[in-house]
Amino acid sequence: MDDSVTGMPSAQALFDDGKEPQALRTIGEVAKALGIRAHVLRYWEEQFPALQPIKRSGNRRYYRPEDVALIGEIDRLVHREGYTLRGAAKAISDKIPSGADSSTAYDSAAMEELPTAAFFEKLGLIRKSLASALSRA
Image 1 (cartoon, rainbow, N blue to C red):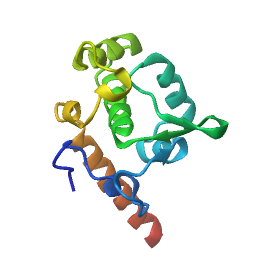
Image 2 (cartoon, one colour):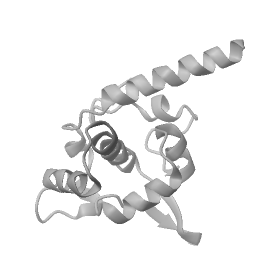
Image 3 (cartoon, rainbow, N blue to C red):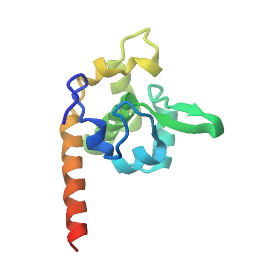
């Protein structure tokens, strides 16, 4: 279920929507999959320079798999480890090599260091368990 390159679970495990693993995701899809509200994701874009989803016509956001992984890392730092947004931004910027373009520097090579795979694995199992329980009710 984990992606051998990034250590992250596959996109099917997170999204279970039939799209290709490298497919772009809308803000709604990402918000629903990770349990983070869309307005929080938009705010995090302002606070974390490395988080730069692709913006298309009408300012619609499309998140790449590395953006989703970064959001998972931000969520872990802020909500589970108690970092402030400023502290989380510093921790993330410290992982990006100096002189690198922040929009592409947080790529799959950097993702190998992030301990979010277990979190996403548990999230997928909980989602399936809840869906199963709801279908029986």
